[in-house]
Length: 197
Image (cartoon, rainbow, N blue to C red):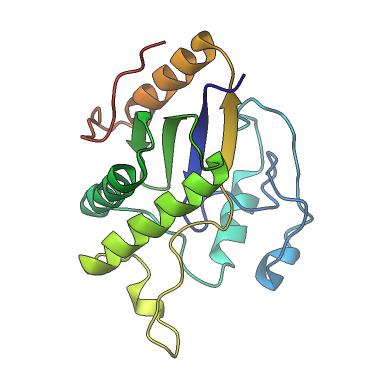
């Protein structure tokens, strides 16, 4: 039985559909990126972030994006956290771990009446509303004719289903240690509750 999920929510431009290490995508939907190759769909449940690859080609593809890749500042990350907190309060989703990184966020959530990918989508929406309300949206300078900026998030999110207490604890440990891997201080969020098997 599924106990929870490890959500990976990426910012716009973080992990491209034709990343040489592999991606979650079956096609490249952006004309700007097609010239950098086909989608690199992988079903490997383990992270492929450390797989050796042509870093220059990956960075060149990012330069071809329609907008600059999003990189949240610390102030913006705190606004994202306030948006996540608002959704958690309203929905009752239990969050066992959260780290909000400059280019992505990790959350470990308990099983809920909403599907895990729906939770990720709703978290992104609430975080975007918070960024707009605080005038911190990282793409505010790219507003469309109706005055709305593009989403700072990738269209899809990744959900790894956790079916054992050991798996939940391992995911929590990974998420809690994620900031240190990027040289950032530990994170504590008010909406995170302890995991009790």
